[in-house]
Length: 352
Image (cartoon, rainbow, N blue to C red; front, top):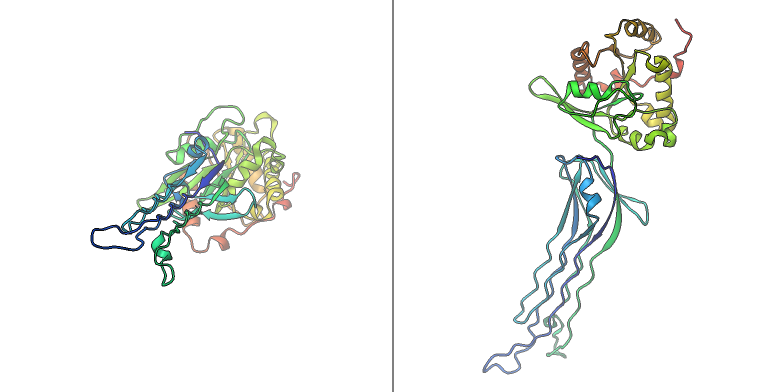
């Protein structure tokens, strides 16, 4: 299924039904009086978060949503039936914005959380409602009110405990495929992953956490280069960033420089995002030169209180240790104290 994280939709509440003008007509009961019933209320359009959904793709192909109108009133004081609501289900983490005002109407960040985005119109009153001591035979009834209508902008921001970030080809997709049931596309060229992937990692019998594989960031991502802004927004809700670094120095890359570039992009996009706790992971250490490069890389952090791991996403080396440490941090009540944000600008290129 394609991953769609931005859509624009039109919603309209159902119109209210008409009130009825009617008079009681029965044998032997002259001047029976008014008996016109009220119209039914129109249905509402309701958007609800559903944890079983992970994309807005269905809303891309159906953009117009209308609730049913209310039934019209009838004689014998029969009220019209209320219109059926229109229910729209979206992934948890969907933000609803009014396109005219650009205001955020709701952040559906919990399963089952919902919002009425277009109220149905109220049904009109029948002529029975207008009877009085001075007007015993009213010939007046109301039309139903129209339902609300508007255009909405829906934006999905993934909810994940861990977001794997790093340059293209760092091994993010391979890692998430090893630790979860996610099956991302994996190939040996940049930008294989063009959409985020979500996976659930099981730890023991009762614990689990959600991890997101964020498509590769590059220099200039905060300005939108390489679809960077669309990718960066998915990291905003994450508890911890897992920064994956390619230690093989493929294409002449330098691990320290890559690390600094990604953190600079986080800072330029959002200081709050840059301050999130990070776990740094050197990948591809199954290659001898990469292991030596990792040891040198790790030495740059020797004065900093930050956890650094080495793994091989291909062979599985070091992955169990990494998962156990992630679990300990996530399920600890002292997460923020244990994993304080670091000033990564202190890392220099020339430090031994």
